[in-house]
Image (cartoon, rainbow, N blue to C red; front, side, top):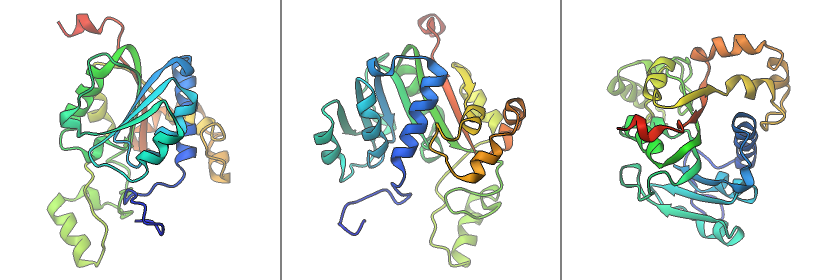
Amino acid sequence: MTNKGIKEPRWGAKDRGKKAQAILQTMAYATRLPLEKTQWLDIGCGSGGIAACIAPQVQSVLGIDAEPWSRWDEFQEMHANLHFVNESIENLSCADNSFDVIVCNQVYEHVQDPQYLIAEIYRILRPGGYCYFAGPNLLFPIEPHVFWPFIHWLPRELAIKLLKVCGSKAELDAYSVNYWTLKKWLNKFHVTNAVPYIIKNPSNCGRSQFFWQIISFIPWKFIDMMTWISPGFVFILRKPMNSSLLNN
């Protein structure tokens, strides 16, 4: 809860504007879509801050989350083209081929069946549509939710017991995978690695700190080659135009 009694996700709701800017800039670069004419879906939208910041730039946004959040009504009043629905990934009511762009930001590691999530993204996207798909990397040594080194490499029950024994109140409830596993799961899509673009264009993606300006000098090919050990992945997924043929 915030000081004003507004319920927010426990992982925080700060810098949603910067994250929305990064998503919009990355999608504009990778897709060349006229974003103002596109219909968006934000899966696992949380309190809705990213969807609310995207709404003025696109035709419409639907945010979906398994838990309702306090600020949804406020954001919907601010943006007539923004709506929220309380639904789980397992029970999505979205029709087939109904969105131009889907945002799946830091979601895959929190669902019971990430491959089912990916299949639903494929089903809901229109042929030729795109998904901004971001999430953590199992092989990065620091677990991004509890900020412990190597803890996520241990068997899950042992890792949880270790956290408790050490007095940590952090919840280890994320299940990330490595680069090759994720790429295998995404094999129905055309996949573009957006990490090099984000690192090479930090100001466009809301990363103005000196650290990001320094690493932006790393060659593009080297960044692409080393993505398998990066803290997280950002993939732009494109559903093939002939997807109806692939499903037959």
